[in-house]
Length: 101
Image: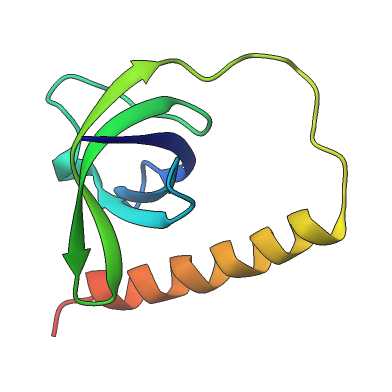
């Protein structure tokens, strides 16, 4: 099992991304989250890494701890802008993957 932090989860679209402690970004679908468990941005999770058609994905996702509630927004920086761009790209790719053929 690998651990990481939920970077983004959209309950309406049923998918999200995890920043693994191994510095990789993992796609996950809600169906891979332990039954009866809700995940939100910032939650610490454990998961089994796997290779999906479009890159790393997380399977058997289990929540370890809830997101810290600091109430402080992260400061804007070049690094966070790059992360936002990467997130937008990953979301677009995941939406394409979710579309029925």
